[in-house]
Amino acid sequence: MAAVIDKPSLAQRALMLLRGFDLPMLLLVAVLAGLGLLAMYSSGYDHGTRFIDHGRNMLLAALILFVVAQVPPQKIMALAVPLYAIGVALLVAVALFGLTKKGAQRWLDLGVVVIQPSELLKIAMPMMLAWWFQKREGQLRALDFGVAALLLAVPVGLIMKQPDLGTALLVLAAGLSVIFFAGLPWKLVLPPVLLGAMAVVLIVWYQPTLCAEGVRWPLLHDYQQQRICTLLDPTRDPLGKGFHIIQGMIAIGSGGFWGKGFMAGTQTHLEFIPERTTDFIFAAFSEEFGLAGNLVLITCFVLLVWRGLAIALRANTLFGRLMACAVAMIFFAYAFVNTGMVSGILPVVGVPLPFISYGGTAMVTLGLALGILMSVARAQQQAPTLSKISA
Image (cartoon, rainbow, N blue to C red):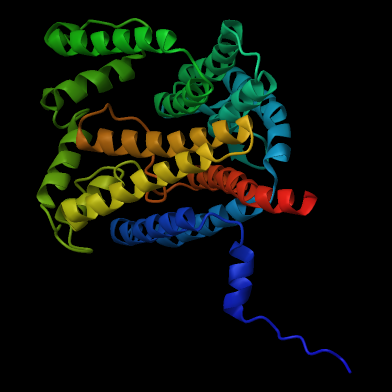
């Protein structure tokens, strides 16, 4: 007599697919994606198909997340050196014969598609450093941190040359987080931090002199210098370089505690907010959902970073721990820099708000980063099962 096998229900199939995934992380991502769709529908309803494209980009990122999560961290680590080498080679190619748009040479025409190689380094850079420290585990010396700093300086320098300050900062933050969590001594951390703090104090103190007409700062492009000076005093050019910051702060302040309501933002829909579907979408979100909505959004990002660090603490290998830390710091850097520049506490740079801002390349990068994080989490859950089987 043949045995009767019950066919699993749709809910059971869904649970089987999600088995091994970090469910709190998935829930946080789902909430952020929902908020992103709300914000994009309101701010981008008259921008053609941006809402539909945003949803499509999210689905593509979710597919990448699911696929990458199935790959064990050991196999991901094997891709670190090739990805880093390809990324640096592409950056050199951009410097030699890249496409120039709006004064920046950041793109490479491959015939079939135009790519921005610097986006690849947001993931390839921390992967390379995590691979390096994994290989040197148990025998780290000061020279090893020097090699790591050199590996980080090469792509950051090439990206700064394009120039692309926003992407350079994100790659730098991801790389420095790996170096720090690998065990960088505090005596090497404190001096540059103190020097940076002193530089900020001096710039603020001598701002009228440093930002005077004709004064040029070393190491920075003119537009980068102007962004810092505009941050310190947006009213010096209210209809030009200071327009973005001023309108962003007006939109955030006009939202009050509860906001003006969905689709009711006047600064947004009267087109006072520049780039309201990309870099400055946080201003549009703040105007319509107010401080209450911002608290929900920021809480989700804080919990997302915290969950990433929690996964890192339980990682089975040094590579997994460092990559999880790097991904968590990538999300922190994205959210902190974007909300800071829109709020007028950081210079305006081209950094999107994760899951909220429009942008296909950034969304794919986030999906890849989350997939790596999920891969580390799945390896943690599978390790006890494997140990029981071997016992």
